Figure 1 (cartoon, helix red, strand yellow):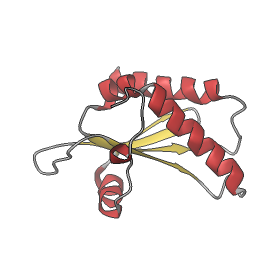
Figure 2: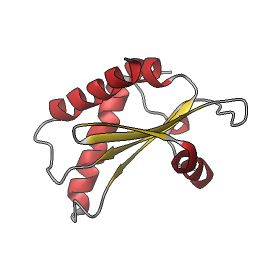
Figure 3: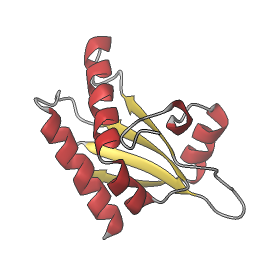
Length: 123
């Protein structure tokens, strides 16, 4: 399997997992990026790590803009998967949100915020 892939089994899609995440997850924010995450425990076993992305329709009315930001968020995760797994664990579920009205000018802005988010969790 590719080291920097984002295969289907890593995508957070099940409604039951998303509901559980919002019910029991913890929030972390860095600049315009916010994450909610939940680690695996004995009560709630999680097989592997899964991640989803979301952008508010309230901030971005045009689907083109929302899809662009979601692509950037997924790309940041894909390129920095090792750091993400080190910070949030091998068995966790998480969801990334972009919480600004401003469209990021460049991928590096989103990537720096993602790296800062991972560093904040680790340290």
